Length: 198
Image (tube, rainbow, N blue to C red; front, side):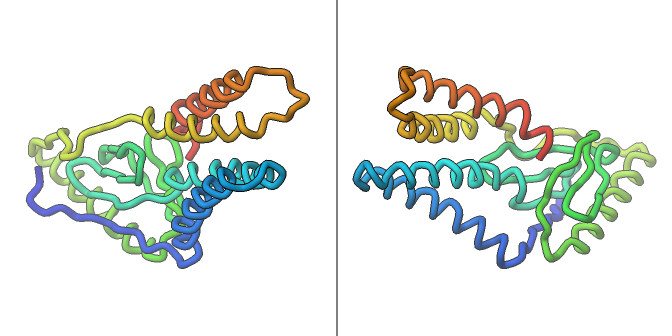
């Protein structure tokens, strides 16, 4: 482990920061409003909560908390597992993505993107020199790895309950099937599909 830990903390534009705070607050406000509103109006609130819930659940895939430059490059995100990349696996794109292991990782559009470019370049050069000099590079990370399961389960349950409450009266299906189907769909998407493309 290195003694000096370089870290990059993104400074997002005001509009993105407002979205990061406002969408979750509005989503949970709509959940509360749908629970205490009479049945005639609650359908609109539940529909708005469903749409806003999907958007809110995708935010951690688009923005990140920090990037650590250790023996591996560590991308730390809110509520999601950290991503670890070796020197030869990362290539900055400098628009709003990092190219890593053959896929594009969205990092939003931080205002201090040039600082990230310099840190990645310096970290990559340092790693290359250490590897060329034959110095041992430890691959163990400071941070434990966790999966997407708890995050996908949380949103699958929340969105499943909302879909169950939105069931039209003319649809003769057991509401538990709607909830379970939504849960499985969200879980599948958030475990296998979305992490590969966002």
